[in-house]
Length: 296
Image (cartoon, rainbow, N blue to C red; front, side, top):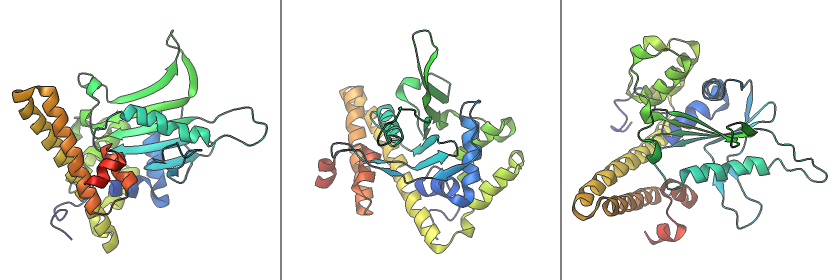
């Protein structure tokens, strides 16, 4: 195993591989159900899920292709989009709304149809903080369609975001099952043993599924590649932020920050392109255009 992960006992759940290993496999489906039941509205409990294809195509050539991390259907017909977002993107909220339209459109039926829809939940687990939420301590956001009196006007579409960097609690401060899940997402890869606060059966399964030593050679290699992408993205974003601050002091903060971020996106695209990642995925991670990526 590479030195990059030799000191880690458990996977990082914020990587593509780690996230899908814990939440995207049939054998660990109960982990996803348990997690969703902590972040969904209290009146909504998931009893059973089935995984569906994560590639959703629009109805016309003009529609963009949408690729979700996880797409599931509840036994009562409700749809769940679950995405792990590692780096801040332009118009991320817009993208969430756009993606949510696909599980709505797929419910259309041929012939006579009364337009009755099943609920759709679009869930974003974010490894960053929204720019307009910097001073807001709230990390769990549930967005609904409401009228001018604050009453829910349409209850079948909900956007849910978790801003993980805002979760600062230490192990001894954990009280609820919800807080324990957030702690796992933030700290799993830094742990060497299962904490005393996480002795429930569900977390025993999490730690067993996440133990790198139990992986096959192919799984270790896949995780290492996923971890490399994650670290590259984090390093480039951090560097871009610092370069933006430094250039901003000399030439104006806004201009310097934008240049740094743009160069960071190009750096991510170069790394992913060198690893033969599909162009749709590169566009998703960087928000660059197909033409920009092809020129690199």
